Image 1: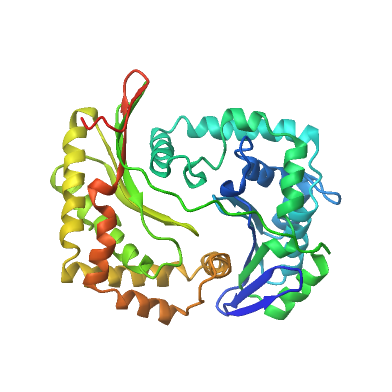
Image 2: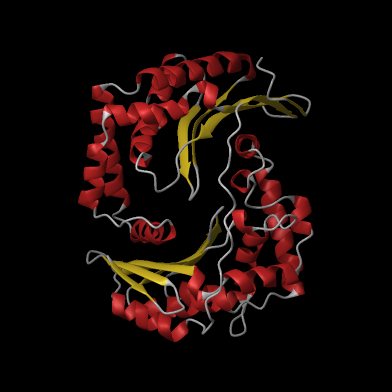
Length: 416
């Protein structure tokens, strides 16, 4: 791994992979949902869309065609903590990708006409998510768990907030956040680090560093049970989860191991008990996520209304057992082996390595080789897993049940 910090510019990281003939490169702007002002929910995501509408030098089609004509592709996404723009191109097209990424990220035209069109696209995206019961359940659960903290608010914003966003609001965020000094650049594949740095020096704008967006205070998690009803559908969607540790916490590895053993595949506890043994669900799995200031863990079950009570009780029993006893020695050995294999397989991809590099700079943690990552996983012991398992204890969790029926919501105090 190579790393360079450009003056008044981005942190630049790269990793060469001699076995591939392509390059994955991305820009990560430290601007996400947690940095948005009240009333401007979704502005980071809408801005991510708008930069693709054209620049001073290129139309929207030209931005896409510049790389597609070479067999490459552009992509972008917004999270709670950053906005990412990525390209995948054949070896030798690095400078073209850098030109396009710098052009769209730093020189968008942000016109009223484009906003009128793209706002409708985002409203369609919000409407699409509102048609997926599982997405509705997870969004409602996040809001319940995080109790009003931005980590629990939807990245897309709401219909009302998106309709209220203006070109001036987008331009204000762009002017403040889209500066080279507020960006992480990562690349992996058939890439030379000096060539990457030279290309950035050519295409990056000369903009002085400015204070980045302020992070909110750490969240305080909520717990309890809520039942929501939604007209239509034939399943009840159960999401339960609670706060855990932030990205840089050393217990993160033990949480990975514990969550994988609980619900990370067909051999996991939840899959075997709730689906294979009792036939209570088609989809059942565990989830976890890590932010700069907090993390969360939890589990999901989709089941029929008539089996929802049994499924929820079985889920709570498994979570309580895990919190009380942790993992067995055999589970720990097997899951460590599983995770190491997953890491090795995933990092055969330049895009996966690029994203891993970006995390090093975004969250300020040490870069580790594959052998060092494997050693960290091997170092996880039963005592650490028991500490991690405590975060899955049912009394610490917020549970959201989305059931078919007339739309209404019961409060957290309703434990039926």
